[in-house]
Length: 255
Image (cartoon, rainbow, N blue to C red):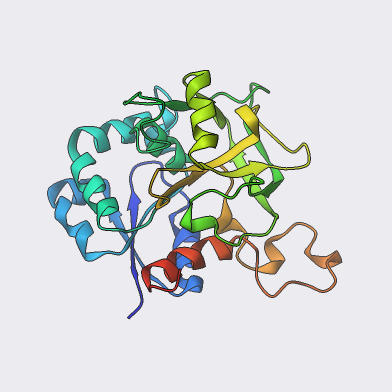
């Protein structure tokens, strides 16, 4: 049976269809659920095996990117999300979804003896919204993240104004590396926002919860790459697909 994917929507979400297509191509069955329906029946998430927070501009990014949705999760759904992860089920947050998971304290999670929010995503150093392709790789010592297992260096697009990853303290920054929570880094000088240590994606202590600013769901087919006409040979699929396939393999017990 194909794993079922819970894709959370709210006002301002705009990448849910790309995420759904990526999971379909990876061998899963996605469903859209609006935050209002989830608040009415939080336990419905237990009928799913993967939870996705897609990109967009939830609630217009008023106050700060992802903050309002993060507050809803923290105040009403934190136990449900915690139980989901405790059951061994993967969770991904892409761009705005990453911002939400950081501001709910699920990423990178408690570190260096500190609980509560241990990092943030803030304004790009450029002071403006940036839309471009970047190069990414795993750190020299791969993280515990199940979503990035075996991932080769890859190109992915970014599109954000508040993507600068900043740990709360120097001890937390060091602890992230010591506990293998840095899952992806910007490579070859392509850091587009000034993130500390070129961090592009992080995981929690379980390796199940993963967030990243780049958009893997936007590079599923080879022709989505801006240089696809000059690639020889043309890859069979876009390299972003591997991230979604890893989650499906994990759920199916092959990860």
